[in-house]
Amino acid sequence: MTNFLNSLLGINIPLWVLIAAPLALILLVLIVLWFVHTRIFKFRLRRIAKTQEAHQNEEAVNIFVKHYPPEKLVRYSRRMERYSRQMGPQVVRKIGLTDKWIQKVTQSALPTAVDLRRVLLYCPASSVFKVYLAAEQHPRLHRVIKDWIKNER
Image (cartoon, rainbow, N blue to C red):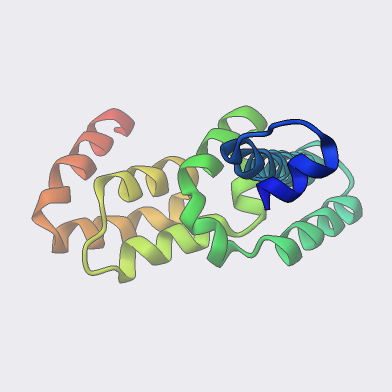
């Protein structure tokens, strides 16, 4: 193959260049696709945070949930937490992610302290009792709930 290309072009191109160039192009395309996907995600999330009218807000939430259901977003909880710090905690509540976080803490065999803290910070006060019951079942989470109770009084 290299001999064919060399005879056509009249230049001596090493084999590694012929392999590296398409791989670099593929990598560049993947990075651009990731970047565009991330920008679209943030745009849809910001639209939820910025809309004030109930009808527009409901429409923005429906579009977002259609493309990114809460079941899939649970895997990206850390990223969603970061976005909620930027755009406000109401964003996480509106898309239904808080319900999935509560479900994860109450139904999981091994909920983590991070999950518990996330629910206590972002979920409504009505979920505190569920979190308390989940913490009572798992002794390693006692300290997290006690610290939260001390801070909240």
